[in-house]
Length: 60
Image (cartoon, rainbow, N blue to C red):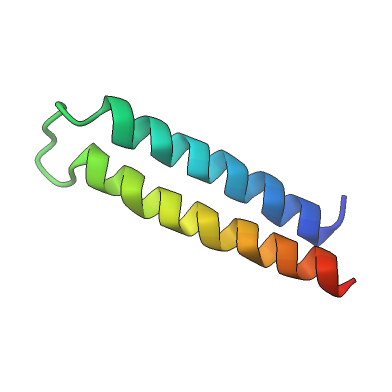
């Protein structure tokens, strides 16, 4: 498995976990972090990682 595919896979998983947190954990109150906001951050990180994987696959 190349680095591009690993980035695509990790980015997709991160994006999906962030989407689940954003959609279904909005009513949960934790003292340190809000799960819905953490989900948005995870979706952004996952999207960037997917873009990096696409860039690396096109560049090869």
